[in-house]
Structure formats: C-alpha cells, structure tokens
Image 1: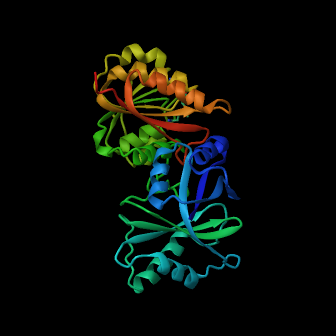
Image 2: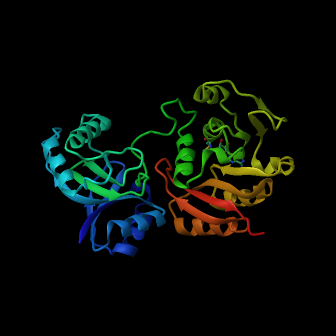
Image 3: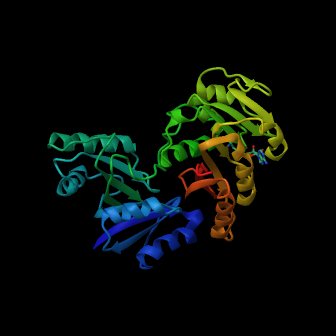
Length: 354
Ligand SMILES: C[S@@+](CC[C@H](N)C(=O)[O-])C[C@H]1O[C@@H](n2cnc3c(N)ncnc32)[C@H](O)[C@@H]1O
C-alpha cells in the first residue's frame, strides 16, 4: 500500500472529490491547505497507475506519493534529514529533480534556494539532477500543518501542473492574468507554439491571449466589443504592433463588436490554425460560437476555450457544451488548469473526418 496526497481547487470541491472517490473509494484524510484542498489516500495503486489516472481527470490538480512526513521545527529546514530520505528512495543511475510545493505555509525562504541547496548537496554524493528531462521528481511539500516529502515518476516532463510559480510570461509584464491560462493550455494539451500561424481570438480584450499569441509569431483576429489594451500588449512583447480594422496582414485584425455580429464579416476568413474563445457567458453559448466559427478554420485546427461554470450542475453544463462542440470538432479534452478560476479549459481539434 502507498499513500498519495491528492489536491484540487476548493472551488470544485464536490466534482474533484467524486473524481477521486470513484477510483479510490471514500476513505480520505483531509490535509488543510491555503487555496487548495488536499486529501491523503491509501491505495494499492502504483505511481504509474496514479499518473495515468491523473492525466484523465478534469478537476483534480495533482497527486504525489508521500514518502515521509518531515518534522521540521518551525521555519527551520532540516536539510540533512531531507537529503537522507531522498537518498533512500533515489536511484543513482537515474536523473531526478527537486521541487518545493508551497501549499499555503510560507517557509520564509525562496523555493528556488531550497531546491538548489538540496540539489547541490545530492549531486556531491553522486546523484544526477536534471531540470529539463528528469525521470523522477521529489517534492518537498509545505502545507500549513505538515511538511512532507513526496515523489512521482515523470516521463521526461514535469508531471504536476505548476500552479505555484509564475512561469507564464518568463518574467515579462502580462496584459491580464488571463494570458497565463492560454500558456498553461498550450503546455498541458501539448500544442507546439510554432504551429499556429493565424488565430482567431474571441473575447480578446484587454488582450492577454492575443499578446500571448503574438509572442509566438501568430497573426491574430481579435474579436471583442471592449477595447484592446495596445500599450499593455506592446509592453508584454517589448515592441510596437500594428492593429487594423480591415487589414488581415496587420499583427492584429481587430473586429470590434460581439462575435455574433461580426460573424458575417468573419465568414470570409478561411483556413485559420486556431480558434480561442474566452467570453464571460454560459458554456452552451460559447460552444455555439465555436461551432459557428469552425468554418473559418482549416481541418485539424485547434480550439481552446474556457467554459464558465456556475455553482450548479457543473457536469450537466459541461456535457451540453461538449455535445454542441462535437458537431464540428473531435478529440475533445478538458482540464481545470491552475489559472482557471470558476471555469475549465476545453481543447478540441476541428473535425478532420469530413
Ligand atoms: C474574461 S474577458 C477575456 C480576457 C481575454 N481573453 C484576455 O486574455 O485578456 C471576457 C471578454 O469577453 C468579451 N465578450 C463577451 N461576450 C462576447 C461575445 N459574444 N463576443 C465577443 N466578445 C465577447 C467581453 O467583452 C470581455 O472583454
């Protein structure tokens, strides 16, 4: 039997718990955390089984096999003890990395400094650290009432969604917090950045997703009745951009208006590589727009959209949106990503079978 810490966003408590209990039963020990809920489960499942399960669930954020509880005195970190635990479990022939997960308990130290210190010490003892393609990750988890050491294997990719750091814009200023949602979606759904030459962005203002797309060299058709923050986009990109209301060759072709009104003009546009939708309306309405605008996409194009979820009937509204989207797209996948609040991100491919 092994113990796993499974955690999820508090906003989706009941949906996430039912994802967990339908596989692992209902015997869960609660672990208090700041923005997340954590539960500890005992299971006969292997790390690989849990990784596979994690890649299929929509609302659970992460799962880590717990190796040991660490009794660190207050904010002091007992490096020698943590290192000896890692030594017990790590394999000298295989690469690994160390990540600090700060689940609501400050350590008073930067996560990076702790990781570097542990990594340097362990390398001196013959272990190989690889930050790019490790075969395993050791997690030092700081929760408000406990510190734990955990691990998960990883097939060359860091397996946990990185909700605790802000990698998103590489330190550059963002136009809006929303831009993180797009970069997380691209990473999670495995989209190569240079494959999107031209994209349509519905609900584009103030321009977070548009800026993210432009940073990949994409030309963007931005649709919104609200105003784009040109200065913010330029600050994010570190260069000036052209915005036109008529010219498809400008960096941004700005269609000012709601998507339903500009759809006739847009119907002249063809063969776009991606459609992004981030509007503050019910999932079914956003899904209908996705189907309507599918005719401007080439086969195999990507759809990335957020589904805004209320408190009630979360699964019902997701199922209804999926049903609508299924008219024009296939390979639909959903994931609650770290920067999603009361919403989930949907990914699909423009139907390539017809
Ligand atoms: C959450 S904000 C989008 C944030 C944006 N994706 C970003 O990264 O900065 C939602 C936007 O959707 C726009 N919107 C709502 N309904 C729309 C519709 N039917 N067509 C186009 N835009 C719409 C709103 O005006 C608002 O600017």
